[in-house]
Amino acid sequence: MSFKINRVSSNSLGTHYGIFENGTLIHHEFSHSAAEKVFEKLQVGKTLEEALISDPEPKPERVMVRLLKPQVSLTKRQDSKALFTTVTKTEKKIEYDPLVYRQIANLKVNEIVQVTNRKGHRSTIHITNIVKLSWHQLQLLVSGGSTKFEKQHLLYKLYSTKHRINNVLKGLSLSQTESSEVQEYIDIFKANGFSKHTQVNDHITNNNLWGHFPTIRSLNDHGECKEIEGIEPKYFEVVCRILNISGEGGRSLDNFKKY
Image 1 (cartoon, one colour):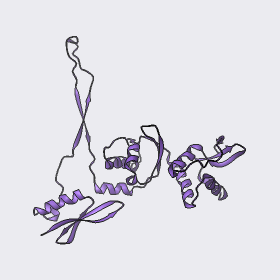
Image 2 (spheres, rainbow, N blue to C red):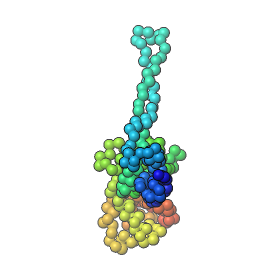
Image 3 (spheres, rainbow, N blue to C red):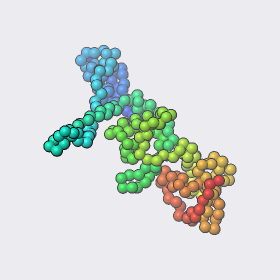
Image 4 (cartoon, one colour):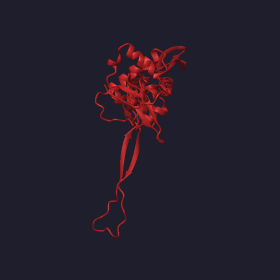
């Protein structure tokens, strides 16, 4: 019998690899390495059912070494050398799992996080689909994890549980209410092809929609123009960063108040 591995399809969830027996597809995997493991077992005469049984292997562990303060004998302080006690801490590495990756890809998120890089430059990241985040964005967002999948998995654990005990975010996230209102504001921007905040604000005013934005709305003063309906400066900045647009070069904001 002749076995071969060929790529069968690609989509937003990844690339699928098929195992063929005499030209007929008999099994497929979500990664090439997983397909190779099955292929190798088939090559030595195992049945497909036997080849799909995972081999019991201990998960690799990374050992982190931490030095404690010197432990010095109380009776021989003057002539004894400093003794260091080495403490080992094991941290399990998160291996890539195609099934978990699919779960991560299917999780819907609506989170806006403001992050700062090493040079102090601030940026805003809108998380909607974890697997679509770039490596650079994951590095800015997540503390922990050394691979892209590990960082994705840490974010998935954070957003898939109701009680966020272990917060891995390095940035400051808006509340769910703030994120939802900013998202609706941005949706109006995109749906109508607007390029300026004033267009969005006028649209909301003309359609009596400010009741949808009780958290982010404000009455803004621009010199002679007083109490103009709009959004607070901090949310104005968030929208500009997400859409990668400027402040339009209009009149500067002198004051604002919530309503």
